[in-house]
Image (cartoon, rainbow, N blue to C red; front, side, top):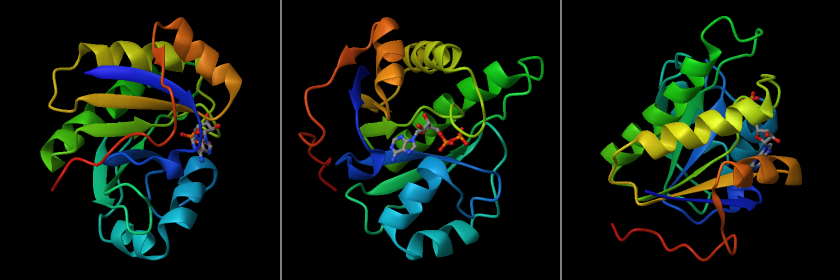
Length: 177
Ligand code: ADP
């Protein structure tokens, strides 16, 4: 699996699947979740409402509707309570489960935001290390994972984990159906 990092907006990625940092209700929220729902249109909320929520560390998929990607994989990151409550394992599980769901869908290109590092308060450096080590440990049919940094600081943290910078936001093609 190839890993790359860019600074960008996940809602603009032309990949097979983007991952949403959702909450347990899957009924929308702020941050990247809000941006994804706005860009996907109201059908996304209707589809999410049928999923019956999602546990922390798990992932569930919907179509991408008005987004340029085919699917959205909704995962629920842990809220940071100081690190003693299994936050590391739960965050690793988000990356692992999202890739499992992507594999099952037949997605080969997947974009991730920095799960849990916004409203959920996970320390960004630790989150970057977990994201990269978890993804590198997986064997999957997914060929290419693009990590989307929303700011330069996150970009640098991911680069420091040895992830190669990607060259542009939109050179990916979709996997043929
Ligand atoms: P969480 O509740 O899991 O912490 P947030 O949405 O608050 O989720 O933040 C997760 C990360 O997503 C943060 O690093 C935030 O800067 C980033 N982010 C917010 N909007 C976007 C976007 N449109 N594209 C990519 N990343 C985004």
